[in-house]
Length: 210
Image (cartoon, rainbow, N blue to C red; front, side, top):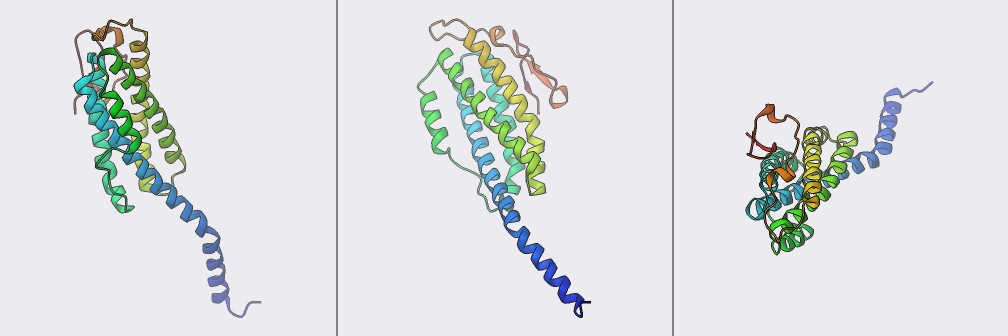
């Protein structure tokens, strides 16, 4: 029989804390890394999207870019207080990788720009969906995990749209840089944003009216 039950309990709790310490620290580190990467990538989507609204040849690509800018701006507003709580600064400039992508895109025009931009959107959102799926399932911090769960359906929709537009743009015949007809790369989109869509003439792809 233990003569010092309180001491025994204290030692047991301390032992559990020591055992869990590394795992908790690892989870916190992973959450911070996710927040930093999510903020960096979302900022890049906004900057590249703004570029596409100015340089894209097709109406569908421009409208996709407008939605990317709108959705990722809201995503970063949602993420900012979480990032602050983790000591992560929201980015103010592009990272090296996306700076190189932007510098390459600004040299392109017409269909060449549209195809290259949409290829980047497919790559970026494929990566983002994988990143957010993992955090949504295994994130240690409830606030960070909830953020990932909120944003994941939006990113999955972005990816589906990007794949559709890119496939149609890639299949369109080259016309010396002329704009692709909107109908050629129209997108079948599911209802979103409470059904508030404004389709353009010749395409059923619209911008979410926020």
